[in-house]
Image (tube, rainbow, N blue to C red):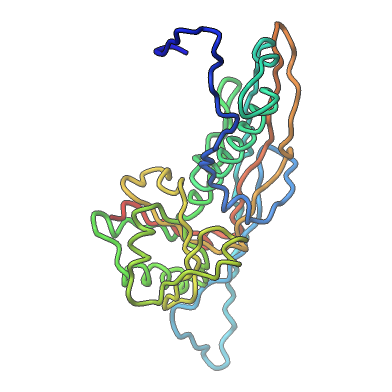
Length: 295
């Protein structure tokens, strides 16, 4: 062992035969969302909103009826090929390792977890790139569909319970009852410290199913507050971002289910890939709201 020496070189090194992994996994949205089939790299879906009533309208007696029609519109995303490669040399594979018996199997396990993390980051905070022959396609995350409810009005201001309630009411007044909130560490701590609105932990038996979740009783209804590692990766988040959405309106589109493939052996090694092609779908743009640069 470098840095240590023994008078008797026949003494074996002591190497603990166990590995304690730190899994930096973040898979809440992609794991808890519905999946929908996709059969083309350009994935579109129809939204046909009911026009909100903003004023009292009467009809003149004996006058002709007025007619107004709102045509459906399309929302579009592109699929993203996510691939994590595994390559282990023959010598490495045949070497006796501490903590695991099979080097290639160990690397596959790690790449599968990395693949899932990549999907989650893309589904939440991805930016749309249509792709070319030399550039990869990347999907727009759910935050990219929040145009009508996006706001930066809190730029440079610390999050308060009044602001949080106002944002949830903003969605409710647009006809969207948001039930899930994604925040990073800073905003999660602020929300947990709110004295009004009854922030509380859910029962431990329920936490086993959904992860670490707080329930917040807002003026617009009860919401789940999720600590999320990637929410601050949203474009222009600057410091902190906060995302609210309707869980039933978010889906993960699957064109090619994630799977393992062997790769060509061109030398003294074994190679393979964890690969799949996915996209994100938001059934209505008002089903997601994004607030950026929140302190």
